[in-house]
Length: 542
Image (cartoon, rainbow, N blue to C red; front, side, top):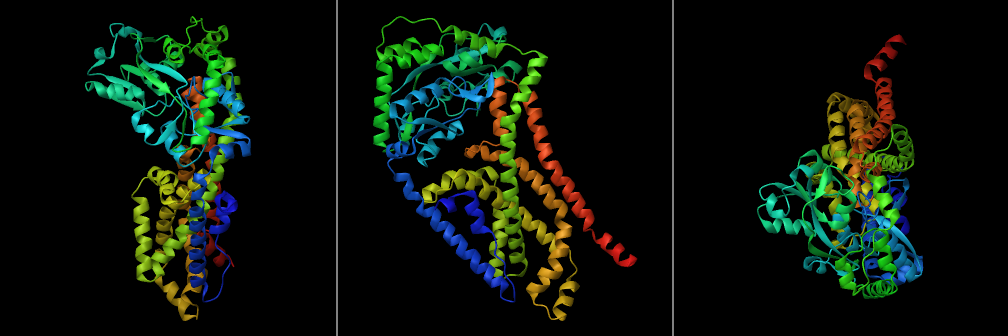
């Protein structure tokens, strides 16, 4: 099972075997059916793993796996602006405390914020803790722990808009907020505000500074870290509403939920939870009232103030250059994953696409119709939707794919449709007389296709296949929505933590160019090497 669920195992199952003789086509189809059946059975048998006792699994592996989104995640969990190799945040520290109470180590799993609950339901990690607010509709999907923090919503505007003191003053204007948050519900409940939602929490404040929107409503902890250091922005009026942060676990996971609640209770009673919030400048009246803590509020820790000052301070040119050097290790790790996903997916896409093209042109009509339907269906739907179906949709049918397998399958199956059209065009570009001549020499149709038609078609399709690979290299960035931390995701996390989308973006773009350039040069050389006119010149010289 572990081999089948791994990337290498997937390749072993799908890789075509060596065949030969007149029965080659039927052997290939038989093996393909067998391999697909084994793969489906393996993934279906993985579904019962969802029902295991999570608490026992946590203690057995010695790690508490918790899901969060570190892209622009201050102050919850985010890249340390002083060290891009480290993650920090008050929930990062809280996860360490919780894991310590359970006698295990913490292990964070990167996941897109608005897909945390879906990931919990498919057991991608043990719990989700990332400023997740308790709502009635979310209670239908997951179970929540006791609240560990009480936050309010803070409106932020540009300083020249000092006349704005509440949401009512922004009716008829654009206000940004985080997608699927309590703040979005508040804004939509007004009915007269144009709501603009964002995937990350840094982008709304950037758009506010640029004048694209007129205000931002988000949780006060976010506003303190993202807006307070900005000289162009200001808080408008007092905080409004209340949001209760809680830890989400899979529905019915009572053992883990009980252990988490007990750990939170101990952390609250012995003062470690309050000490954590004070260290991050987050302790407030609402949380104190909820905990029944009547001790007076204290000023934020000096290191917190120094940290905020460091975030808002613009580095010198020398410091900025050194900073970019420190960004290279995480970006290179992301580039390595991007390259692996792209090459593996393209090899599969070429193999599947060639099979589809041959089936469409030479197989019996029902199979040809199915191949055509596949190509049209896949080309007619977005890759993002296909990835969501593979990763989040299939578990409802009892098929559980790991993130790596889902990413490779999604990319390869999508691009196989385009490769099928490339090969179909290449095959049809070969004069029919060549097939007839091969058949007249006693070759079978398959032998003629293999030895005469396909070698010439491959030369024709080298340019479009190369273009598709470069496109796939860039489209691999989409797999970040299913927990893969590739080059684009690393860029997003670094840029959000340092408020530098231009410089880090140029670094990431350069790496993408360097990844694709050798393949473009190789394709140009191959195209020139096997060009038909070159072969003709060689024969004439002989």
